[in-house]
Amino acid sequence: MTPLILAVLAGGVAGVSLGALGAGGSILTVPALIYLLGFTPAAATTASLVVVVVTSVTALVAHARAGAVRWRAGLLFAAAGLLPAAGAGALSARLPAAVLTLLFATVAALAGLHMLRRRAPGGSGTVSGVRAAGAGAGLGAVTGFLGVGGGFLAVPALVTVLAVPMSAAVGTSLLVVAANGLVALAGRAYAAVHLDLALLLPFLAAAVLGAWDGRRLAAKVSAGTLRRVFGALLLTVAVAMGATAVL
Image 1 (tube, helix red, strand yellow):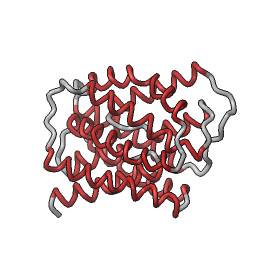
Image 2 (tube, helix red, strand yellow):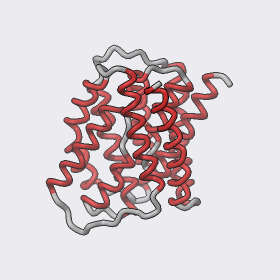
Image 3 (tube, one colour):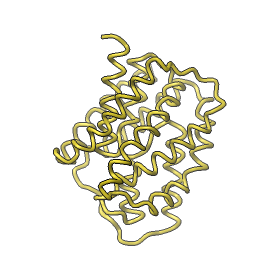
Image 4 (tube, helix red, strand yellow):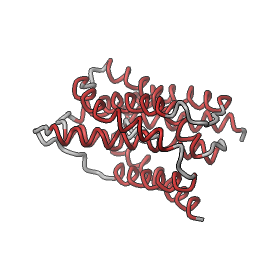
């Protein structure tokens, strides 16, 4: 199978995950870029941010048309993570490849375990400004550092910290992910990282189309089923990446 076909297939899977669940797309993007397309860890996390921003905006449009985005809550949450995202993005390019890979494998494992949980988080009904700022800052740092959107963290945080209903949490998380990803990408603007556009652009195009399909898929397949499938996939990816970093 040629690298171009692999790029299209992997991009489609990442886009479907992001569009359907508001999470998991970027965590699939980084290992796909490294192990299927030959990107270095630093280049993969930077390229992942490009994919995160574009696909998140694409999926956000679909959720916004359905009225499933809480703009004020999302913007407030995202604002707390902008500076951490920029700082972490600049720092990430200086880490050794093995360390970056191991950290990413840890985050992927946490994301997979979260997706495998059957119980959806419940809203607390009260909103703490300190908790909201802390959660937003933490999410921004994760986005900037590892090049992941952090939707698997944003969705439960929006529900439990900002009392956003689950019906709007996925769409609102996409707003947060897009904002953090754009700032994190700007923080890496001066890093000497080569991106293979001949493979990245087809990957990105397939991810955008997949994000639209994921939104439609979410309306036909139960959220629990989707989460379990992608959760199992993420755990598999995490184990493989962790083994690669250690061995």
